Length: 266
Ligand SMILES: O=C(O)[C@H](O)[C@@H](O)[C@H](O)[C@H](O)COP(=O)(O)O
Image (cartoon, protein in one colour):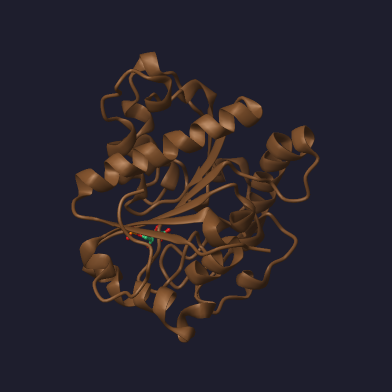
C-alpha cells in the first residue's frame, strides 16, 4: 500500500533540472550500492535519455556521492519497441546514442539489458516479453527470492495522453497483476508492437521518477494532479500505487496552473 504523496518539483531551466536529477539519481545509486552492491535501474525512451545524459555526463566534483560508478550499474528498459536494436525506433539505440556511448572509460561500463527482437524468430512481442521477464528473473528472483522485482530506480516519461512506459489510458494491460513484463500489440502511438514493465513492477521499485517538461505537458499534469478524472491515467496510477516513492521533475511551463503543494528544489 502506498504511503504519502508524490513529490513534484519544477525547475526554472533545463540546466537546473539536470543538476537536480543528477543529485537524485546518484543518491539512489548510493543507497542501492549500500543495499546490494549494484544499482539496478530501468529507463524509458522519449526525451528521457537525453536529459539523463545531460545529468550524468556533467563533470563530477570528485566525491563518491557525485560520481556515477557505471561498472556497478545494470540498466534495464521500462519499455521498448519490438524493433531491431539498431532501428531508429529502438529505445536501446536511443539510450546508447545519447548516454552509454558517451560515458568516459574511467567511469566504467554499465551492463545493459536490451529487449532484443533478434532473439525471437517470429514477430510475436509476447515472446519478447517472456524472454525479458526471464532476464529479470535471473537478475532479481534468484538473488532475492522475490515475487515482484524491486528496481532501485525507474525513470519514466509521461506522454501528453498520460501514458507511461507503454501503458496507455484505458488499456487492459493496466489491470495486469501477475506478469512482470507484458506485450502491447496495438499501441495507439506508433510503433504498435511494444514490450513494457507492468504497473505492479513499476510501483514496487524503491523509487520512481518522472521527467516531464514543456507547455505540452501542462494539461495532462493538471489532470493527473488536480482532477478526479485524471485518476485512471497510467501516470496517475503510478502516483497512487507508489505514493511518496514518486518524484516528478518538471519545468515551470509544464506545471503552469497545476495546484500541487510540494514544489521547489529537492
Ligand atoms: O515509447 C514511446 O512512445 C515514448 O518513449 C513515450 O512513451 C515517451 O516516453 C513519452 O511520450 C514521453 O515523451 P517525452 O519525454 O519525449 O515527452
